[in-house]
Image (cartoon, rainbow, N blue to C red; front, side):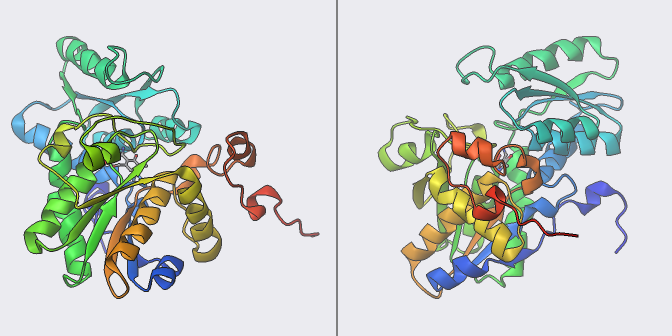
Length: 339
Ligand code: PMP
């Protein structure tokens, strides 16, 4: 199949049956393989929609600069879209993010600004630094600058209303009883949920929330209050973002890393699926939702990005052991074979 450019290769990802999760629940659990996007994550969709919306609105002009604060994947998507469309991309990233993601950003052509990871309320939070930088560059750069603002830019959610949700509906022939995923900006969850609910108001929408996020406590008790931590990246949220406004899940689960990581390792060892940590939270959530719905149902989740992006963390025995997290035997003591 010939595509006009790399941007036309975004989306249209397959749904993959997760064998063990399906067998253990008696349900059909399907993962949408978003790591097969050109930038290897679900965020390519939002990146493309935000850039196209800005072009239409005239806030991004030829020769302009895209500026964003991102945990990494949105930046990789924006840098690819920027390269293909002729924009410079400047990414502000918290220094806690994986070295592999920073390298991928540089390879995709982005200029990186690394800042200390501090909460959103702090004026030096990476999103706020990005906003100020965009305002400054828009005055000094010849083509101006555009702040993508993925958390509150509704073109993010629109990408999933227009593509992810309808793709899931069509691939399952409308046989989808539940959809669940984690939220970073909330674009994937709220957008996909809106598209599925518009087609079947009876679909059950779930939030899978990592420790350290305030969303599950909020939907369960009304209080935006976080506890604990997670080594997963790109998910969890301390506030109701613009993309989450007006959205409510039918069920929500708080999922500890100790539940999600064995699923990531098992999917790699037994099913050949190499995924990042947020996919583990999603699959754990899909299993919980499948148990809630009972055997015979179809539950869809998102396989957000590819595991190689986390080789130095999630797949590093020393890193895991230092945090009392499970280390799979094959990662700890790989077989040696004499040549
Ligand atoms: N997983 C990963 C690895 C991500 O980078 C992100 C985006 N921050 C998400 C999941 C969550 O996606 P969204 O922003 O649409 O909520």
